[in-house]
Length: 115
Image 1: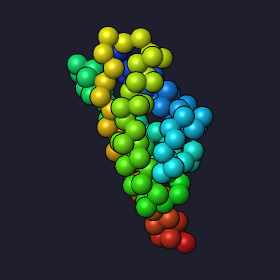
Image 2 (image 1 turned 90 degrees about the vertical axis):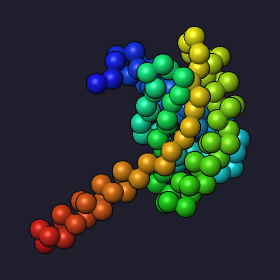
Image 3 (image 1 turned 30 degrees about the vertical axis):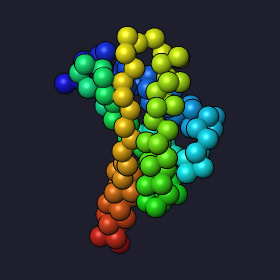
């Protein structure tokens, strides 16, 4: 089970990165405002963080957005280090999250079997 500190740091990272995406602070054209941070996992020593993102635009746009976010990871980490007081800012890596699409497919199959 995750400690409360890891959860708090994960929530702070999720909120800051989501806000940066919404305010268009990331200038990479591959990253649109329709990209959503769904989940963040932080390593026990707080040196690494995996940020899971999804998009309503489809899998192609999502893979482009993830590559854009990974390209801008150093910039994002620098901005976060200025906004959040931590001893060390975690190294960020962005990962595609397809769980929302999978959930929609499961619901669609349930609807088809009930009909």
